[in-house]
Image (cartoon, rainbow, N blue to C red):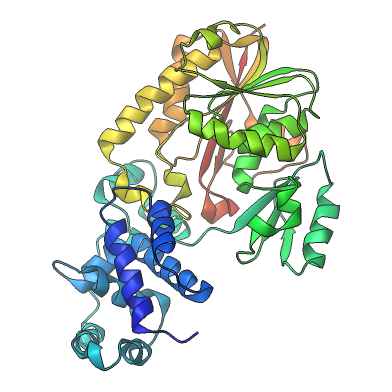
Amino acid sequence: MRLTDTMIGHAAQVVREMLKFAQPADAVLSNFFRANRVDSRSRAFIAETAYTVLRRRRLLEKVVGERPTPLHLVLAALVKVTGLSQRQVGEALGNDGGREASWLGELKARAEPELTLAEQADLPDWLADRLLQHMAPAAVLELSRALNQPAPLDLRVNVMKLGRDEALARVLADGINAQPCRYAPQGIRVEGRPALSKYPLYLDGTLEVQDEGSQLLGHLLAPKRGEMVVDFCAGAGGKTLALGAMMRSTGRLYAFDVAEKRLARLKPRVARSGLSNVHPVLIAGENDTKVKRLAGKIDRVLVDAPCSGLGTLRRNPDLKWRQTPESVAELTRKQADILGGASRLLKPGGRLVYATCSILPEENEGIIDAFLATHPDFVRISANEILAKQGIVIDCAAGELDMKLAPNRHGTDGFYAAVLERRK
């Protein structure tokens, strides 16, 4: 691909908007591409370069120096991270870019700066400090480097329509490089970024985009045919659809959410999936009368709680700059309230799975430990034993009851899940 000054300029425009943090990075990209007609190769370059700046912001700001401009961050990313030569970038800048080409030469000649651990990890200081409270420095660097890599594309096969082996054979026959996921029994990991929005198996609901770690939550809940199940924070319903397929479209599966727009996006996905047991329900919160009406009647509840999302930095690198200690504290209060409200739904003997895509203990085991301290009628059970009974073996620490996934160890997003049962 031939690099041009227009492509570099567009990338700098996108970075300028992203660094305002007024909206999520993917929304900035979508808005830019709607307003600017560019070819597919340029789109890929602009997106990848802008996300590289977000991922490696601490390093790039240290390299560039005081008051870094979006353009200088982009140029530094191209030569320091992406690996393009000074000559390649200089040629793309053209005759009108002499001053920037000269600056680039000066940048290349500078000695490498000394970096703090947070700068090496490309994390804000507060987040690096939080991780260092329960991880060794080398472990923080290993985790952060994995979180700074782009995420793979994982798909879940809808077993109501096709088995995974057959679906994988179809995908491979269609020229898409893919392989079975390492852990998720219905998961397929795809190479590259195929145009799924026009792919027949995606359009007919046979395939859904879902990270492998997220798919495992359904196997922890393990709903059975004919049961009453609640997905308490359903969102757009990726996990709801997985649960419905595991229930073979029997029983009753409630998809609760406080956002009408998210539930609206679920409805066409349910139609594509072929499921008839899904019931989307708009609620005002965990104390809604629609929730209270089902108290003590539900067999299984999934609480995929709203969280910092810091386990998803591979695909959402802006979150590490958007979250703050204050926002995390607010989230932990909300998580505790949601877990308390959702727990009241369970029958004696029922199962609840609490999950986040966070890497912070205060959003994870901290919430569960505090809940169990005030709810003696609940007991924590081994997530790994539940998975092992289904032939899913996760690498975990000895004696660990909860599921903890990390990109550097498992190749998934960072996920946490605890399994609770209500005593009979």
